[in-house]
Image (cartoon, rainbow, N blue to C red):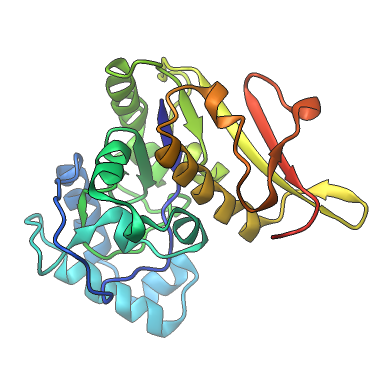
Length: 258
C-alpha cells in the first residue's frame, strides 16, 4: 500500500534532530523551474498570489531566493520532520524508530506544490506553495496543470513494487486533485474521520487532519500491509463505522474528541 498525505504550512527547522538517513527529492528539476517563476515575483505579488501577510510574503520571498538545487544538511531537513501542522502532530515522526521510518519511507508519499511528491526522509528546503495556488507557468495557469500526470505516473511506478498495490488517500481534496485519476492505474481507498457534534456526525477539519496523521502512525506501528488491517484503527476514540463505510471509503467515527 501507499499512503498519501498533504504537507503542512507550518515548518520546524529549529528543533534539534538525531542523525538520520536522508534521500533526495525525485522532482528537483521541476522544483527548480517553479522556483525560477517565484523568484520573479515581488513580496507584494507573493502576498496577493497566496493571500499572505506582508511578513509572511517577505519570509517566503527570501526562501525562494535562498533555495538551491543542491540539498545539504545546512539548508534542508527530512520532510516528515520539517512539516509541523495538525497532520504531523498526529504522525509524530520524531518519535519513530529508524526501522519505522524506513518502513514509512517505502510507503508514505507527501504531496507538495513545490516538490510534487516527497518521501518521509527526502531532504526538503523550506518553502510555501500550496497546490491550489494559481501560479502561471509555461505549462499552464496553475499547479495542477504544471504537474499534469507526473504525480500519477510516479505513484503507478511506486505501487508496482508493492505487495498490495492500493493507494490509501489521506490527503486533502486540494492535494489529491493533483493526482490525475485518468492516468492513475492503482485503486484508491479514502479514509474519513467524523466527530459526533450537535446530534450528528460531521468532519471537523483540524480534528480530521490530526486523525490522518494518526492513521499513518497506526499503519507504521502495525506494519499494515492491507486495507483490512486499517479497519482496526482505534486511536483516540475512533472506530470503524462499518454501516457507512464501503470498499472505496472507510469512515471512522468517535462520540467526542479524546
